[in-house]
Image (cartoon, rainbow, N blue to C red; front, top):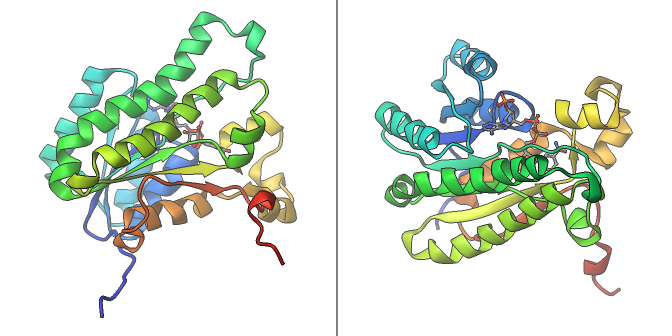
Length: 258
Ligand SMILES: NC(=O)c1ccc[n+]([C@@H]2O[C@H](COP(=O)([O-])OP(=O)(O)OC[C@H]3O[C@@H](n4cnc5c(N)ncnc54)[C@H](OP(=O)(O)O)[C@@H]3O)[C@@H](O)[C@H]2O)c1
């Protein structure tokens, strides 16, 4: 009988936007599980300390300054990664940005920035990773919107929601296109996660969030990291083109009839 073993040990994972929040915690989790970790953000100053912490714990980590909206920079990111580790087994398109703004007041620049980072950044990185992922029979993990946000919309985040909805559709489409190359493409759709960005938005820090609230409706980034490791490992080999919601909210419309 085939034995199932959750492991990313010895694989190389590239995580965008890993200088803080979910990306930082995901990078540390993959590293703790034995993966070589390549992380990027827009400034070396922000992302290098995360790689240093990982190296201090005895694991391999490389920090590279890269703005995912810049295709040339993204190509360099993958070239350096391949030079250092030979391949990319898992790409995690985590880099994202959001600015609360009512639709009527969103400037052209704000709209384009949010679409550029969340959607075009995912496009740039995934296309640049293509040859490595196909060689490695690897995985892509994108970041989308929770089911509740998809169904009810997210007021004051129309640009962000539009970009994330596109990322979810890209996930499904690419999963079909790359199925014959044995590259799995999936997406994680968190609700609220206790990261600096959300803490600023809701006005309280993770430390101040009531534990019950954390358990009920605000996830810890570690809980997102658990799902990312699962999706990157062969334990999830039959999960393809899915968006997995991690928001602590039961799906009432999907409850079985009693
Ligand atoms: N937190 C939540 O509740 C939540 C919910 C649903 C989905 N998500 C998604 O989960 C992902 C992570 O969210 P988070 O809350 O952890 O965000 P965060 O704390 O704001 O972190 C965003 C990361 O992306 C980097 N970044 C921003 N723009 C970039 C660019 N153009 N190129 C490269 N890196 C860039 C930032 O680093 P620098 O500033 O150093 O560049 C930072 O490391 C995002 O895709 C977000 O949309 C989060």
